Length: 145
Image 1 (spheres, helix red, strand yellow):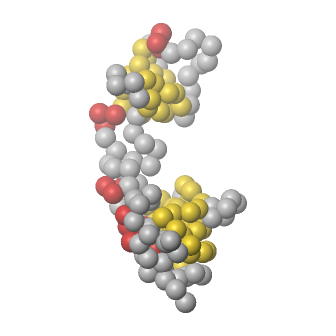
Image 2 (cartoon, helix red, strand yellow):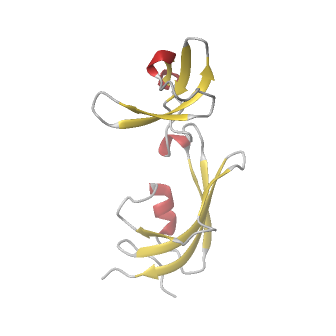
């Protein structure tokens, strides 16, 4: 049976869990995901595991937080004056906001605390600081042309 190699497009099913077992992503209810090996479309550790796998084989890979979404950074917690928030919605912990940065790009913020005059928001990626465990299954290989 042929093994996947650099340049091949592979179809994979996966489940991603945090170190404490919380599922944060999976393809189970959807179609398998196509990944072209060697194109940096997925974390390098996952791509390396796919290289050499055969159809039907399964593998588990851990991606450290430093190689995934980075460490949680306290400086990414910001205080926002309540008057800068839309008046039509009362802020609550867990609510997400989109904010425009000085360079014009958008960053997503998650409200973590609500005070009388300010709201604390977290600009860290929700998975920052988390090691991620990928359970992979190779479904199909589309050989490079």
